[in-house]
Length: 185
Image (cartoon, rainbow, N blue to C red; front, top):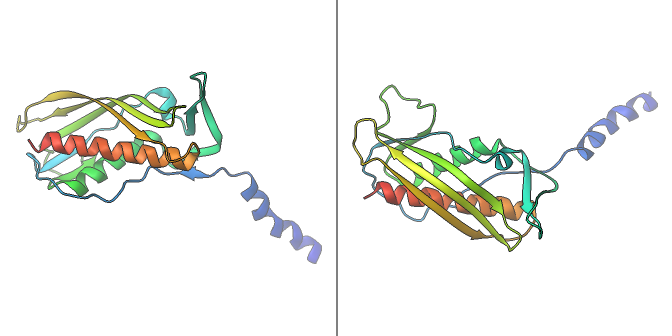
């Protein structure tokens, strides 16, 4: 009887050996809240470059090649994670009701933010780069529609997956703060 139970007891241990750690893009606690020119805001799905959409966490090496951090994956689909992170941060730091698409309320949102990331990279020099553009659109012209470029660089706390995830969260927070600031004018 003991010999029959042994393989069953070892199964969870063997399964745990093959799993890779997964890392989230987390936000920091907001410092201040801003009053926005709109009361409702939809965050459209963030557009990422193909390499940033992958589940593997990448870092640039000395030659400029992007290589996978050994055995490290993002905990969520990077597009979804960034979209949700932006929506949550904008909701926390502003007076607006904010949600990621699809817009969940009957009444349409007063404005939408469309983010297109052109570069999202942990650089070999110890920085994390997030650059691209965001567009603010307003169905009823409540705000002036516009496209704004962004180029955010944060320090990597470490070259490992946890450091890259922390830097990605900090850069996403900075982007949300810029969008909120732009909408508060």
